[in-house]
Image 1 (cartoon, one colour):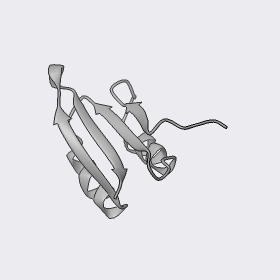
Image 2 (cartoon, one colour):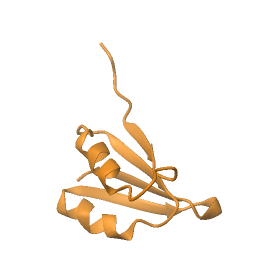
Image 3 (cartoon, helix red, strand yellow):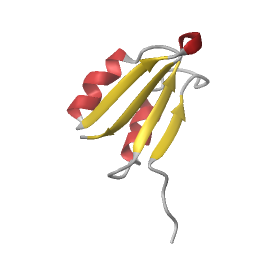
Length: 75
């Protein structure tokens, strides 16, 4: 039986254009108990309200080089 990692990573730094659709697709693929680690070159403030509306909790951290890490999971 294949086991799934509890954390998936989506790095949107190299996506050409707005990453919103890629993020929504990744959220839709999350199963209960899995987390998404989003890596972005900016703080994705507009995403936070969308996450709350969809029933996700998040924790964000500003890392080295201006990179943001946002850990997202089902509430």
